[in-house]
Length: 257
Image 1 (cartoon, rainbow, N blue to C red):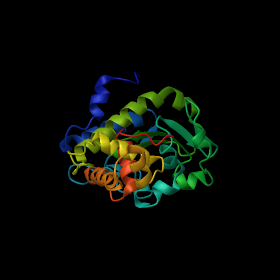
Image 2: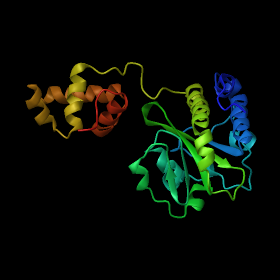
Image 3: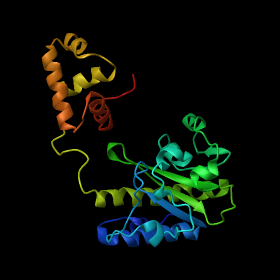
Image 4: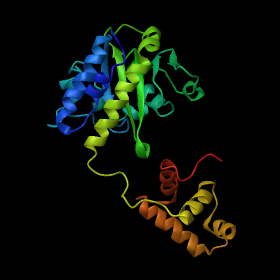
């Protein structure tokens, strides 16, 4: 069976609300073909789970998660509790995990610090291949592929064979689902920052005060505050820290010193 096919990529791509269900069914079939069951989340910080055009929960309607399963979307703390979702914050490529830790194709020291105590209870599976989906404006989605054999704990062979293909299919489904279902833009269309606003935020990002920034830029303190306030308004941010963070997300500044 050929793992990567363009027709399968097209099948899992959501192009409108009307084809959400068929795209989910295509992703579900891909998982089943390889002895897996998919668990999709369009936002790991949100207990809501993907739905079709009529609002039916895809996890139960398509992906086969029944009432007898420990369903992740009913756990409002899943983004904080599960080691899988925690790992998705620090890894951008597919990985697999069990009670013994995380495995990736390339080393990632951040994953070594994640608490994996009570892995099965907290991750709601004994082992899984997880695909993080990093989206615009800091949103993180994910698809967990859990073995149909609930006793299986070693997915090393499956990971080597399937992770690249599952990664492409999962990212295509989640990213296009979010694009189609996004009811409001994360930022207003007029969010382009000016050169002065970016310059002020660059200094703010490394801890400089308004007074210090004014001295560095040879501008008045009021002018610095004006530029930072304008940036906050454009980015729909509620305070200075969020303004800096959103500017970094959009690539205007770097948070690395």
